Length: 185
Image (cartoon, rainbow, N blue to C red; front, top):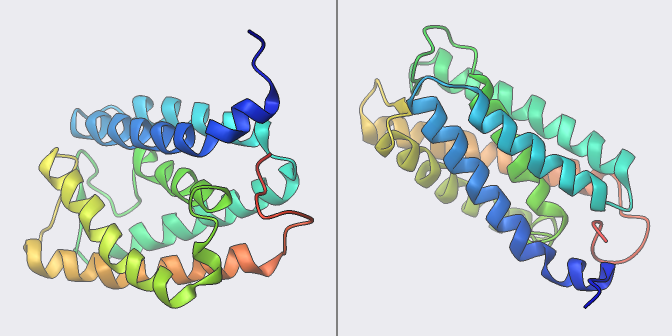
């Protein structure tokens, strides 16, 4: 049986979600063990697949670079204020395993979460809920801590992620797709 591009693309959103979850676990488990490379390797593979399947690689790459910069600034602010402390990282610069998660998460806006940029208020709410849940999971795995305490740290993460998700929406809406509802095809 020959696997066609249309078959691959029909299943890609679910595969993409699986790749993201695998990257998240590789990054956080690696970070908890003081290893930066598992998250970087998983993220690089995920993003390489995503870019290979994109019909608008230049636009996709531009958005992912912007998402990475946004992520660095967001996590830098969280670490600099003391709301979050990353395992094995004495400075405020986010570790590589954390940085790689931002473009991986943002890549989901191209297919699985393609409806999010059309609903910015909902995006802010989802970011304000999903961000803290992800960081709480990271804390449970030992990849980060909340020096202010869990409640205050999670509120700071919620505020940061609400703003960051709104900015991601602005990034995705700043350049419309050339054609069709799905950029990755």
